[in-house]
Amino acid sequence: MICIPIIDTTTDRVIENMRKASLIADLLEIRVDHVTDPDLEKILSARTKPVIITIMPEYENGSFKGTEEERVSLLKQAVYLGADYVDVNLGCAELKNLIKNRGSAKIIVSYHNFEETPDDLDIIYNKIKSTGADIIKIATSANKLSDNLKILRLVKKRDQDMIGICMGQTGEISRILAPLYGSYLTFASLQKGRESAPGQIPAETLKNIYRINDLNPQCNIYGIIGNPVNKSKGYILHNCLFKLYSLNNIYLNFQVNDLEDFTGNFPDMLSGFSVTMPHKQNIMHYLDKTDPVAEKIGAVNTVVNRDGKLTGYNTDMTGAIKALLSKTEIKNRSVTILGAGGAAKAIASGIIEEGGKLTILNRTVEKADLLAQDLNCNSGPIAEFKKIRTDILINITSVGMHPDTSESPVDTSLVREMVVFDAIYNPAKTRLLKEAEKNNCIIISGMEMFINQSAEQFRLWTGIQPDTNLLRDIMQWN
Image (cartoon, rainbow, N blue to C red; front, side, top):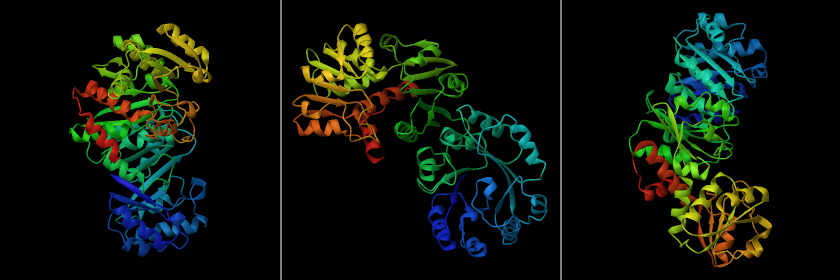
């Protein structure tokens, strides 16, 4: 179930947002500790969905400023008025009496750790269970990606109703996967900016993109690994495709700071994953097999798990070259690439194969020189762009990516009457492309590369070749 916390300062505002949240939520949590004039009778009379009453004290990172006696009095009142659920923290002195006199309410006994995900979760679980709680809630902070697995494993082996969550951006995946592992519910915000705890995802995204109400526990898990990944739109595209093709699959964002931590804990649970910067080259050390094209490029952006064996592919080259050939010829054209990372190497290899005359420019010229030596082409610093004859300019740097959309990797006054391709797809039209268009250039958005390479990823994972027009429609409407 999806539970939306309601955080407002007045009873009337609480009721107003209860109505909005009820359109998408399965149940609501009323954070009474934020309400200055809490009228529980009025709030509970207005419900159209089951309600959890929560009054978090300040020592639990809550906002209730009254005495503990006043807080307990409100919790007892919630029970008396017939609240569906009442959340009581494990450290509450009146916990035993509240459970004993709970009436028709279900008591959620909660443990929060805002610093870490401890190793003794089993002990904490059993301590809460011994109180006679109807539902056990454990919410911890994820400091590394594998902390999510501690919570997910606990949820999976539970022997009574339990809510398990990892908080923070690194813990986002637990909010999506925990319900599939058997968590009683997951918390989601009414909208972005209305989170009651760090890492909450908008309810509309959980319901309509991730489809957590519809998938079953046997679903295949895919995702993207990298840092950062919060601006990636792959989760929108692939989850929409999974829905359109009626596949019991889900695609998540895995923010991977520590590649060894990820590869030591997650690949067995994933059917495949995308790889973005900075891991496209280092991931190759952890694979069982690498496709010859990816081996030649020296970078992997797609991994397929076949019977526990990980095979790496590179769809960046295919995606970029298809995008370019839809607008221009490459053979015998002078091509300048800005950037020297994994994606740059993939696209540069494609340019060489198509017969382009290539120059690689990079801010760190040593990296450009190394790549150029490998591909037998020219290289130099980005500052040299003004001296180079260019028919096709390709930007593979992150300059101009959201949120720094006012930046351009080169002086745009120099970009005239050429083909300009920017691999950035957020925003779809970067400053470089906008200025190039004004200067009579043919422009190609990174969205075209993204769509082409994503279609190939989808085929590698599912065996289905999606229509790229379908992918364009998905991205246009999302």
